[in-house]
Length: 366
Image 1 (spheres, rainbow, N blue to C red):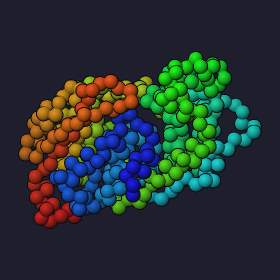
Image 2 (image 1 turned 90 degrees about the vertical axis):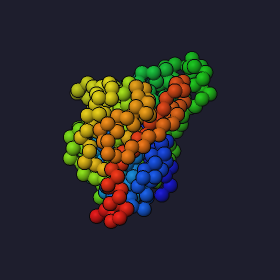
Image 3 (image 1 turned 90 degrees about the horizontal axis):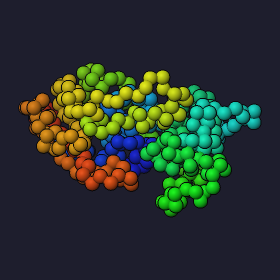
Image 4 (image 1 turned 30 degrees about the horizontal axis):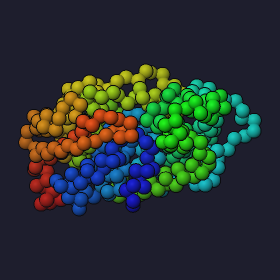
């Protein structure tokens, strides 16, 4: 399986780890050789955009447990992580884009976001796909259809990292309410606006192939959960725990994903998005790690906004003083095409129970 094809199947996700996958799993291989992974259980407590989970599935772990409370992550799990063989066929794509002549009433997306976040033309297409998705009896096909819609959402806005009213000028050009020459000339040269003008059917066909290329059989059972992370880690049983919580000192993603979630759900969320306690400081991280001592190997991804590599290593060592704790850092831009911050670092910490690796080396895990 081509790792890049796996990553391409996933929708763009702010804070996703797809560019860091080689680093994360290479580091794990230094303490737990790849040859033993097929006998181990891998736990992804903050699945998010799914890049770590889908790579863990491809690596052939004995079991895979994925948790995330968000609906968008559930779609990734059902469509790509848990899915073993169901694919979107050509006839499925035809059914998704079918619009009866009598269906002229604007749907949720067009009524709520048409002319602002999306052009009326693109909003109507998103409504058509949403309306036709429910006809599939297969949960996997429903999830794949939603993931196709998610990919198209990024196609239908100039800035995929900002799905909001900043797209209004571009929507008005497509709807014929504004002349194209009134746009910032930069956007005519850097491709931000050009991709919105692409014919949708060829784009959808390419996305169908990308999604299907991300589907593969797992070596062992795959389990998905939608639980509070603290409750999940207390109940989770396995050998390797990957943690990628919201980073302290950074803005939460939920408010920024509010429109995306509404389009995927077909309605506005009833409860306002709350900022994660993990974003406010390292206290919640310490509390979470204290609940994870029964899992022998930790992999922790984190940012350097309020703590550096040495500080993070010290925090983990204080909680599990008898473990071997290793730390690394590297320069990293999460939004490399827009950010000007040159000081961002990605931190990676491994905490390994020495008695577990000794037992693994002598006896294996059964």
